[in-house]
Amino acid sequence: MAVGRHCRSGGSICPVIMRSRSRSNGPGRSRTSNLRCWREPEPWDLRSSLQWLLPNAAPTTLPVLPHLDNGRAEELVLIRTGGGVPPDQRLILRLWPSCVVLSGNAAAQPVWIGTVTAETVEHFKPLATLVDERPDVNAALEVLKAALPAARLEGRAPALTGQDWNGMVIIGQS
Image (cartoon, rainbow, N blue to C red; front, side, top):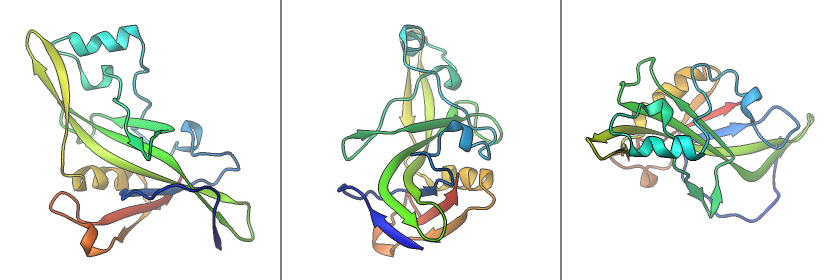
């Protein structure tokens, strides 16, 4: 299996690396069906934006604030609530294309990088609802790993780890 780099982009330290089995450019929602209990978040529109002004908005009704990787917005965002996630939290999986393509005997497979985080929804009654991204990514990573039984955990260099991240990375296929 060969690794080819198709564009210039800086690297990120991300706890999720996914390889797409399809010939399309990305993992797409239809190809992430093995991520049961994960769903697309509310889209940004007037109705969902107004949810931030409610003092009791549920985690599922709030749109996800965008994150950038080297100036690029994520191309796939999924959320998970319930199923072991506390009622005032949601897990967010964000994926970006990495510009790395694996090739070999089979069709080329683009590699996607991502991150999974937990957000706590905080209600400031009667003013608004805010979210606070939890610094510990290890618990969110374990929930994602449980949704991807064929994926494996690999350790990163100890110099890259910290108290909020144990250095483990999920490597899987969508």
